Image (tube, rainbow, N blue to C red; front, side):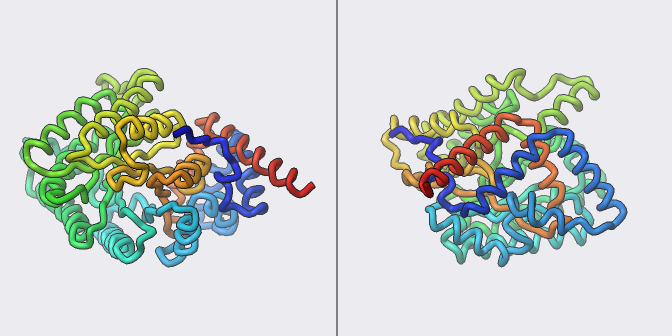
Length: 391
C-alpha cells in the first residue's frame, strides 16, 4: 500500500476556504524568525505587566494549535476530527505551577480527562506531564539507591502517589494513559516510576505507556532492556516514541556540566534510532503496544510498510499513529483515510496557562524551516486546487 501524503484534497478536507487561508498566513508569519522573536518578547512583556493580550492570541496561534479552554470547549474539535476517522487526545497543557495547590488542580483536571475519555469513543488515550506533579528539585536529585532526607522522601512519595492515582483511574476505566518524557536529567525518576506502574496495571493489556525520546543515543538499549523486563515479569509494555523536544537545552547543559551529551550526534542517527525502535516494537507485539508520535513522513511510511510486511492490519488496536493538532494534517488525514489508527494531540487550557506550549510551537515551526515550508507548500497546493475547481 502506497499512501500519498501529498494528496491535499484528503489532507485538508476538514478545512473551509477561510480556515485554509488563516492557516496559510499564520505559517507564513511563523517562517519569519525576526517577527516571531519580536512577538514573543512583546507577549512576555505583556504577561509580566498584566496587559491584555488574549484577544491577539485566541484568533491566531491559539485557534490553530489549541482545542479550547476546557474539555467541553474541545467537543466540536473532537467531533469534527471524528468525521474523518481521526481520534483525539485531550492534553491539559498548563505548565509550571508546582505549588501543592497547583499540582492538586492539575491532578483533578487530568482525572477529568480520563473520565471524559472513558465516555467518549472518539478519545482513545489520556496523557500527562510528570513534571506537573513534583518540583524540579525532586527530579534532579531522586536517583535510585540515593538516601533521602525526610523532606525529599515526602516529595518522592507524593509524586509516586499522584502518578499512581492517575494510572489506577485509567486502569479502572480501561483508558490507556501516556506519560510524557522530560529532560534527560529528570527522566531517570520517570522511567523508574512508569516501570512500576506498568508492572502493576499492564497485566491484561497496555494501559500505562512510557515515552521514549529517540534523539537520545541510549534509548535503543533502554527499549530492548524494557521489553526484556516486561517479558520476565509478565506484563504488557506501552511504548510511545517521539524524536525529542529539548535538543538545544540538552546539549547546552551537557557542556555546562561537563558530561557527554545524551543526544545523537546527527539528525540521521536520530532518524535511524526512531525507525529501529518501530521495528523492534513491531517484532514484539505479543507483549507490546506502539504509539508513534511523529511529523516525519519517512518514519510514517516505514511504519506502514513494516506493518504490511508483517501482515498487520491497518486498524490493529495495538498500533496508533499521532500528530499534534494544527500540524501535519497531510499525514494524519491521509493515514486515517486508508484505515490506520490515527489520533491528534489536542491541547487545551486558558490562554495564559497554555502560553508556554504555544511559544514552543512558534519556536518549533520557526526553527524547523522544513516543517513550516512543507505546511505552506501543501496549503498553497490545496488553495490552487480549489480555485481551479471554481473556474
